[in-house]
Image (tube, one colour):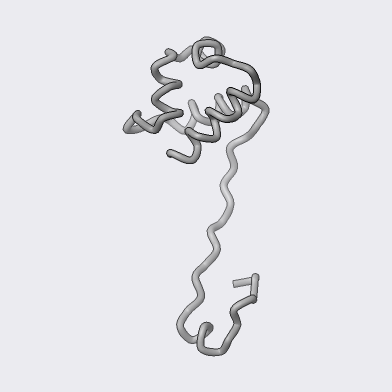
Length: 84
């Protein structure tokens, strides 16, 4: 969550918004926005994060993680095979 919080903070600042302004736009408290940005909220709903990002002109997406190479693949020297 920390990376998303930093992203939201940077996007909010780039948009010239205060935490209070962003919170008001999304029906949240300033403390909630602060907690998201500073990673001090134990859990935050994905819908809240998606709504904030959409309000800032971005969307929340998921991309597959790169699979780690197996020992056999490493032994054969297929270090740069991006399809793995």
